Every structure is written in C-alpha cells, then in structure tokens.
Amino acid sequence: MPGDDATGSFGLSDNEKSRLIHRMRRKSSREIHSSYREDFSSLEGDDIPDFSFKDLPGYQDLDIIWRAAGQAGIEYPFFLCHEGIARDTTRINGKTFLNFSTYDYLDLNGSQAVNQAAAQAMQKYGTSASASRLVAGERPVHRELETALANFYGVQDSIVFVSGHATNVWLLCQLFDHHDLVLHDSLIHNSVIMGARFSGAKRMSFAHNNLDHLEEILLHNRRGCKKAVIITEGLFSMDGDIPDLPRLLELKNRYKCLLMVDEAHSLGTLGPTGRGLAEHFGLASDNIDIIMGTLSKTLCACGGFIAGCKELVEYLKYSAPGFVFSVGISPPLAAASLAAINELLNKPYKVTRLQETGRFFLEYARYRGLDTGTSAGAAITPMIVGNSLLAGMISARLVQQCINVLPIVYPAVQENAARLRFFLSAAHNRDQVRQAVDAAAAELVRSREELEL
Image (spheres, rainbow, N blue to C red):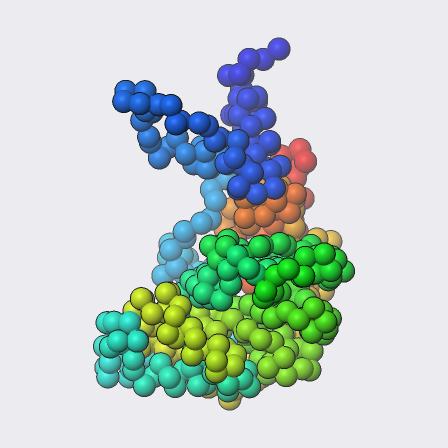
C-alpha cells in the first residue's frame, strides 16, 4: 500500500488527492473551515502557535489545485492583462484574441458618446468627488444619473453607491435585522449572502429557480418574522437563466413579502429595450419593491444602484453606512453611465442584436453537443464539464488558440458543475460564435481523453 507521500495523478500524493477530492465535495466554505476549528482557550505564552498566511486552510487548498494544474500542463488564464478595450476581440501579450469574457453586453464601453461624457465631466469636476455626497461630494451629474436610472425603470427614485458588491451588502444590513427573514435563490450573488449574514436576519435559501420550494419555506417560516424579502437575479450570472417573475409576484403578495431583483446582468440584456426582468415578462418594473443593478456592465463604469420608491431611497441616503461614510462615485464614471443609458435608449437595435446572437450561441452549442445547462440564451451561456481540472485545461488550450473564455471552478461552483462561461456582446457575430464553439467542443473531447475522464 502506498504511504502518505506516494505520488499519484498530477504529481500529488494519495493523501493530497484524497484531501482535495474531499474538500471539493464540501457544500460551502463555512463547512470547509469548520473542520479546522480548535479550542485555543487554554494556550498561554510560548504555547500560542505562530501564524503564517500560507497555513490558512483555504490557501493550502489553492496550493494543491495549482500544483495539480501545473503537473497537468494547465496555466489558468486568470489575471490576463488586456492592453486595450475588451470588446468581441481584445489584445493580450501583443496578440489579438476572440473574447468571450466581457460584461460590456451592448458594446458601449469606449464609444465616442461615453468617452466624451466622461472627459467633459473630468474637465469640469476632476476625477474624484473627494468626499461623501452627504457632506461635500454631491455633483449635478450624480442626481442626473439617479434620475435617469429611475426613469429607465419607471420608478420614483434611485441611489448610486461606489461599489456594486457593497450596494447589496449595505442595503440588506440597513433594511433588515434579527426580527426579519431573508429568502434568496441558492445561486444568488455573494454580495447578497454577505449582506444577509451581516444583517442578522434569519437567512434561508431556496433551490435554484424552484418556486415550489420557496413557497414551502414561506409557509413554514413567514409567520413570526416582521419583514420578509425574496431575492433573486434577473439573469443569473453563472447559468444564464431567468426566474419566473409572475409567480414570484404572486408569492410576494400572498405572503406579504418584499421582492428584490438583482438586475446586474439583466440590464441591457432582457426585454425588448433592455429594461430587464419585468420588461421581459411584459410587466411594469414598479411591481418589484427593490431593483438593484450595477454600473460596471452595460453602463460602462463602476458602482451599483438601488431603484424604487422615494421613501426607500431617502432612507438609504441618510442611513446606509456604505453611502453615508463613503466617497461619492467619481463624476467621470457617473457621466459615463449616464451617457450609456442614453445610448441604450437611442440604439435599441443593440439589444436586439445581442439577443439574436445569444440565441444563436445557445442553439449552436447544443447542436455541437455541449451541456449548456438551463441557459436562456440571453447573454450568458455556460459550457458545463463537471471537473475543475478539465475546465482549466480546456480554457488554457483555447487561450493557445487566441480564444479568451474563463473557467469557473470549485469553490465558485460545486465540483460537478465546473464550467467555462461565455459572455456575449452585441459586437459578436455568428462566425465568431462558430469558431469558439467548434474549438471548445474539440478541446472537450481531447482533454477528457488525456485526463481519462
């Protein structure tokens, strides 16, 4: 029998392989790290152990994965440096790549209108608001952007934060506490999970897009909680699928809940004019109590926003720590997003083009036998391969062919859901789609054979 140091596949010892497989089967990082908890309460003086960052359990897991990837000849394509605007194509290390890793869904980033707006704002206001908007950081362009966002969704007002992730965290921390119930889709973004945890509210997840499960949870848990909120995404960033908004509204009303929709990836991609989930279903956006979105995707900047009734917005403006105690969004970025909204309104054909390309990608990928999961073919389609090393190998080999598409591996997804994730842009055409899908399908077969999967 081999000992702990016996070398197995990819240069790992049998013990390391077993540990890696065991960790990948864990359901959450909380479960992973619970196995490392020890009682140090009795330690004193010289008995207190030294600390090194390399001893962190999470770092040790990464080290094993990196070494396994290295032994398999895989160079994970993370942190590649793009040397210009990342559109349907991009420049990396002096080479032109076909690019499927951009959130610039409507191909507006770097456009003349957006660039001019940002440049003019920079000349007028500088590059920073230099203070919290509450005290000295307010600029006209901030309110112009917030008014435009509210009008875009047909609601009363909106508020812009400097970070999309922080928008969800501070919204939930400010609105909910231990008296309340937060229900979210199991595949919701990390920012919602963090915000719900920090709020102290009772937090429960329902199976992805399974509204029967949601109703069961509401039936047994709604009573006894003061406020309750149901949170979902307009377009899910990992799977590219869409929730059933009409039924969500029915459950919201029956159980007297608030409904929050994270429109980060659905702004510009869903609905005839890109207004998101409600427009996709032919409904008014003000049916949704809390609309969250980001400025970093379709709107070409950086930051997040909440749109809804005026009371919600006013309350957040004077109380949400992530707004009150944070510098205001950079005026050039606010101007860029404002210009992007106007471009979106003036060029709805870009939305149509994106949606047509997304549907074609989905159809062609399925034709080539790829597992695209539950993608709706809007702007995001995964290629599910079910193994992190396999996903990394395919992505690395596509990079060698100058095709940039990133792997999503454990722990971002469960090991059996490891994938490549393709983002579509209005700039992509069908020939580019065929080239990428054909190459991915070929590398899937080749890499499976080499890994003996």
